[in-house]
Structures are given as structure tokens and as C-alpha cells.
Amino acid sequence: MTKNTSMQPRRSFIFVPGLRPDMFPKAVASGVDMVCVELEDGIAPKDKAEARKKALALFDKPHSDDGVERIVRINSMREKFGIEDVSAILSTQTPPPALMMPKVRSPDEVIILDQLLSEAGHDTRLHVIIETNEGLEAAYEIAHSSDRMDAMFFGAIDMAPELRCDMAWEPLLYARSKVVHAAASAGLDVIDVPYLDLDDLDGMRVAAEQARMLGFSGKGSIHPKQIPILNEVFTPSADQINRARRTIAEFEKADTGLVVIDGKLIEKPVLREMYRIVSIADRMGL
Image (tube, rainbow, N blue to C red; front, top):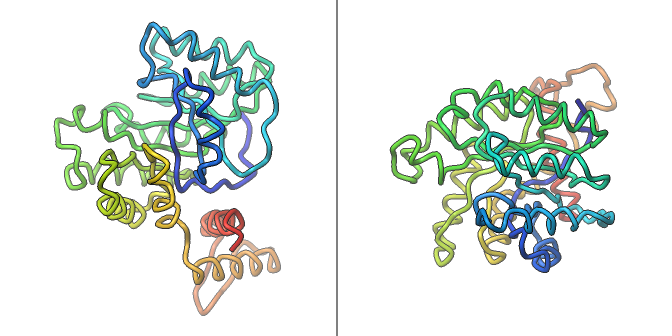
């Protein structure tokens, strides 16, 4: 296993189809924090091999260090296409920096992929989508299954029919909360499902604010015009940024594992959130 040593803002993400590598540079330049190349649901079975080849070719040469996280969403490891995706990634000398695993049902899937990547000598990071009943039940164990993991994603589009409920805030509140709890317990970022009504930006803002208050780090988008609002909602306030920088400075100066700031005891687990806030501020030049 490989340990995560850096913080990455994850306020927003967007998918680009593996069949359209020409869209990748535009997505990277859109202001989004994460760009995910799609090999799963957005690609028809007949096009899987072509999409895989084009997606992996995007990483033949190193990318600039521009703060945008680049990810490839593979197919489920429980399916033929997922096994073929993993095989191709293990065979290349220039793997994607991160993989998104869909429909994860158990920690074993993550552990197996972690071990295969280690055997191949790849430092590839992992993101996991919780979107099945089995995955929701095992979310805590999945969150703790690999040091490669950086984030968990809540997949409401598949989760709602699994739970036999409407894809709305109230019916999915328990499921969302359980994923947030699992991610937070392992110090992972947690990302909410995209808002699907492209013409309702006000509704998307409300949904993003609800997700932020529940503990989500960011939210997906289906179009670049949604990204500025998402980044705004999930960007910490000036007071939060100042407090985070002060807390980090006090911790590093004290070197004791806990400090008292404004009469409140601040312990080491709080520090991860402080570093996340500062990483977003640095990305924004704040």
C-alpha cells in the first residue's frame, strides 16, 4: 500500500467520455478540481475497448502540475470490462494518477486492486463510489481498506433504485450520511452526486449547500457552467481559512499533538480538515 502525503481540493468534478480525448484539455481548463475520464456507464459495450485505449493514451506523457486531479473511472471489477480495464492499466508504464472504482460492494475489491497496483509498481491513487446496498452496508470497512484511497463518492443515481426510493434529498439522507460517516472516519474526502437539472442552477446551489452542511467536500457537475457555483459553495470563508492557517502554525510550533486555541482544545484529527481548507485557499490564491 502507498500512503497519501498531499492534500487536493475536491470541490468539483466533471466526466469526459473516454471516446472523446479532445474534450479532456477543455475540461482540465474549466476551473474544475477533478476531471474523470469515463470508461463505465457513459460508454456502450461495443466501444469499451476503443475508449480504454484512448483514455490510457492521455497519460502517455506527463501532465503539468496545475492542481487539477486526473482520474479514470474503470468498469466494475466484478465485470469482464472492469477486468480488462485493470489488465490494461497494470500493463502500461504510464498509468493514470488515480482510478475511480464504481459499484464497490466490499473492501475485498479495493484490497485486490491495491495489491495488483503494488505488484505493478504503480503509485495510482483510488476513489470509490458507494452506490449499492451492499456497498452502503460495508461503507465503513471499504473506507478503511486501502491507504491508496483519497475519496469516496455517493452514487445516488444507482442508489435510489437499489433502495426503492425517490432520488431526492430526504429519502437519501440516511444513505448520504452513512457515506459521509465512513469517509470521515478514515480521513477521506467525500463527494456528492452531480445535480442533473442543468437549467436549474439555483436548485443546484441549494443541493450543494445541503451537501456541504452534511459534511461533503464537493459535488459533481454535468456541465462546465455548474463548476463556478460548486467551487464557490465548497470554498471556505476567509475566517475559516485564517483559523486553519493559525491552527496549523500553532500545531507545528507546539509539536505536542494537541494545542489550545481561543480556549478550545484542538487535537490532531482536526488537523486534516485544516490542511484541506488551506489547500483550497492555496489553489484559489487566497
